[in-house]
Image: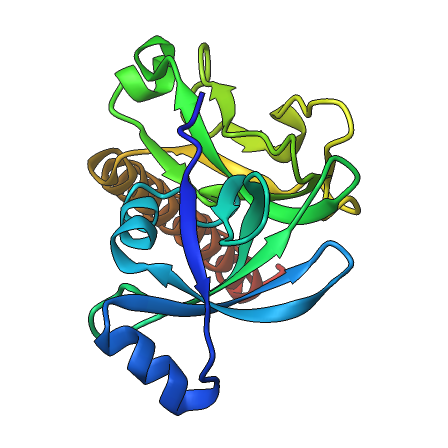
Length: 231
């Protein structure tokens, strides 16, 4: 079970670029709290709490709680818009959405592969080529799957894992339903690919030489027949 983060926040009196910069200088991260039938409220969040959740991979797509001064209890929220510094790579603005058991949202759930040591293809030197590290789903905000696990037992080189291999919990739906897209493949290692390519090239060359020989022999026979004179 993933840890549930609790974010303490305070109302932010100054808004706009100037207010956001002032909040950061004072060790806070600016944001907005919205949803739940209430008006949006500019807030500021504790930098260390946001950073901790972000580094642990829990800031987005994970249910959290927010502690609002003057309001009873902690409200369930989900970070829906996280602006990251282009150089430092850390959050500089976070919008929080109030949710309840009726709220449904689209989120990306990470994928984890199990039993790689039980895949004949991987044991032979194949490579697990992950095409999608997360799957977009439409789920209840209070029941978002933490992770999707896919068993690769028995898979050989050349096998493909499609999204249909994932068992979805109740009330959780794929965002993309019109195609069974690829999640991962068991690809041949580069050394094996090179050997196969060389073998195919050599075989193609031999076939070509054989075809040229046959063509030459046919042409020779036709020429010989054409030069023969009748008595």
